Length: 357
Ligand SMILES: NC(=O)c1ccc[n+]([C@@H]2O[C@H](COP(=O)([O-])OP(=O)(O)OC[C@H]3O[C@@H](n4cnc5c(N)ncnc54)[C@H](O)[C@@H]3O)[C@@H](O)[C@H]2O)c1
Image 1: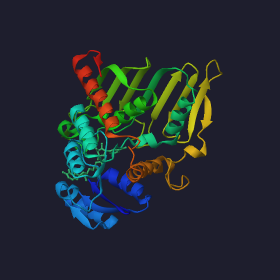
Image 2: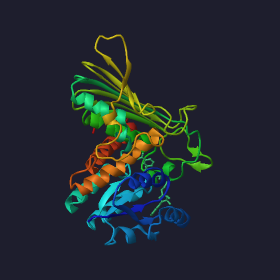
Image 3: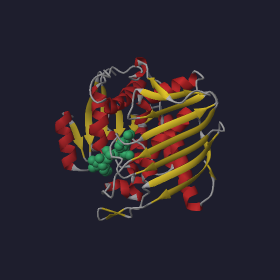
Image 4: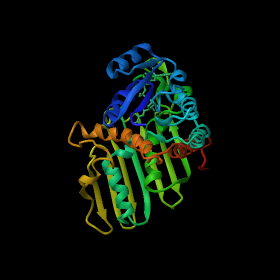
């Protein structure tokens, strides 16, 4: 196929912010079909994209013969049914995180997509941050040595704003752990290896948000062990007052190893802090230009806000995986591995015990 016809299911925030501009970078790709349950949202996206097909039923869209690949950007509870139906109809699938409401469903998505022989990808968007990719490269070069500690912190200020479906457990699965920490669990797996056991705490400090009930966690902390023997400390909160709500708020990752330390914040997309064993302290380390865009991406890193535009490389990777007939860089199996950690964290918070992942 020369032109790839894409269907997008869910035309809300993330579709407009990430998926459409990302697809616009990809040659010979057309947004062919759109689906949203909300007719007004659907019409706005149809007008913006000029997509010839617009439907409120996702079943009608993902079963069409003229759709080659599907992007799923709906509330979380819908992801498994849409992804599995699409895969069974031979469509390649990029699905938003968290993949599902539990690890069993997430693994089923991965297995069904493999069985169907389609390309599949989990939208762990922050894997496209240039500093993150350079950090992985430095680890491969042995600059970290043996990894001792993984540490991450995601702090946002959402106050008591209504979060819509995100604050309803049966639609979202979890709160902060799925919404924000899932990305950082995936970083941890990518940088250090699989988590093996953990103890976690979750807290709902705002049972009512702007007059509507919230039965999800606003805060999560995990103390973890990895198969490599590395320790992990992960914390994420929507209630870090004063920190700002957007992507400009704190998103920090630090690794300490036998040879040195590396640290980055997403806010400084092209800079790490680094220090060598026994050295005077951390100092800035600029990310070389060859890491500023994802391999194969035509994106000009000088165009637009670099804190936003790195995200567009995600669509490029999905499309290139389809064209090059290879697994994507972040498959559904990665999404399922993250979901196993999330499930373990919920179990641990309920029991107050260490649990195996
Ligand atoms: N990768 C990232 O960095 C990132 C960032 C934000 C959101 N997300 C994920 O993207 C997904 C969507 O989040 P969002 O912020 O865009 O939410 P949103 O509420 O802005 O958009 C979701 C859209 O799905 C539509 N929808 C609901 N039910 C539907 C159905 N049955 N069929 C078709 N459409 C339906 C809604 O009308 C809405 O327009 C979630 O899974 C979220 O976790 C990921």
